[in-house]
Image (tube, rainbow, N blue to C red):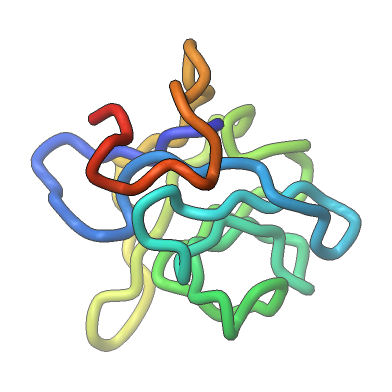
Length: 115
């Protein structure tokens, strides 16, 4: 699993994402509590936080413009968020590997998942 977090920002796209499948020949992670949210590589080579209906496209809420990183957790570049009229850097946003696995599988109800 990976974790998307930003100090001081509370948003439904933040939180745990679990690897689900390959998209555009790269790993894609689905949000544990909001399953319509994904992190995947877009068709332009950048990483996106996006809706399931946009999976694998170049559309999303957040973008990591790093075509070289094998995963969003290995990038040193800043994420960008779309704010009204354009993309702006969100320097405190980070995507990291979770140090311990989630305590239950996908059948586990959301209320019983670890915080």
